[in-house]
Length: 104
Image (cartoon, rainbow, N blue to C red; front, side):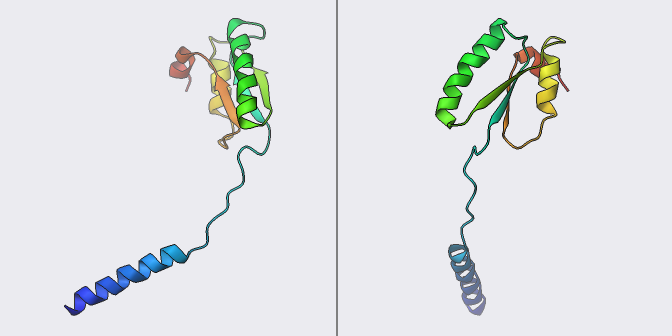
């Protein structure tokens, strides 16, 4: 019975500590322009589609999208640049599904 009382006290203490912790305030996202890597050449069908989509994404996020074309090697150059970019959520990619499979 004594062990049950001690266990209950420990659980209650942990619950109270978890409620009493200070909330962490994250920065609003996004708070700077977002880069969009397009793996198609400028003026091509994929580029036009990506730029049309970028206009709607800018309206939704309230932040500018900077389109960067990186064509070549059946879209794998742009996909490789996307894979090697900083992992901070400020880089988007627009590429074909085949390039996503073959890029390392």
